[in-house]
Amino acid sequence: MKCHILTLFPDMVLEGLRTSILGRAEEKGVLSLHGVNIRDFAENKHNRVDDAPYGGGAGLVMQPGPVYGAWKSVAAGLEKQPRVVYLTPQGRVFNQKIAEEFAKEEELIFLCGHYEGIDERVLELIVTDYLSIGDYVLTGGELAAMVVIDSIARLIPGVLHNDASAEIETFSDNLLEYPQYTRPEEFMGQKVPEVLLSGHHGNVDKWRRKQSILRTARSRPDLLAKATLSEEEKELLKTLDFQGEI
Image (cartoon, rainbow, N blue to C red; front, side, top):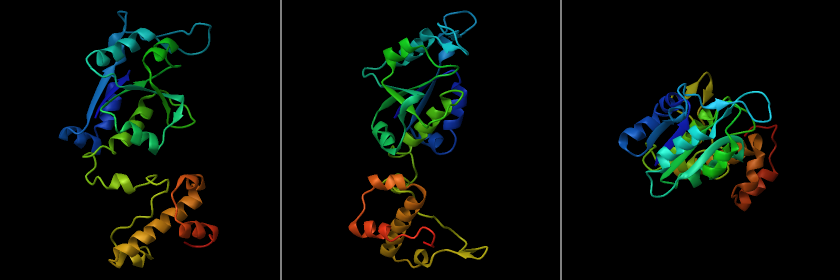
């Protein structure tokens, strides 16, 4: 997959994304990250890309020309026009299902706004998807784009060292991930659950599934409505005492 990020701060985005797993994926050729500086397409000698909003109001608005120029610099060389994702609190809220949807694309363009936003006319011309990472406001779309790209990229075969881990982690079945343990067996008086030391994979799987259901019921019960549960698991939920121990 190739991700093009249209932004005023390409170094910020690329340096963050190229750290750790995604950086290694790019080195292997599994993922490509391309930063496009919107300021390079400014139409004035001072490289200014913003101006006061028509109608008055606080702050500045990004002008349509530089944004369109940045988009065209990517889109003009492609046979198939990729989806353009604009990071904005007004978009649909990002989740794992959307990550899986976008992971099927060969190329994506991410548009990062700044200041008080971007002139509506260019958004109507180029944007295909409006996406939010939550009901709060950031100073720009760069951090949101990094979150979305990270979540999508880890679903691409070859990005993770163990591709199976993308399928079994949090939200893969609308359930939170089960508790994880490693050495030592005992830490500050707390021991690893015996079932994980048993070597019986069937029992381990059952324990982990139960822990995922219980953890979801306690912390994110809203997810359970979308989870696929057996009749036995549904009965377990009916008998839960959330004040007791797991």
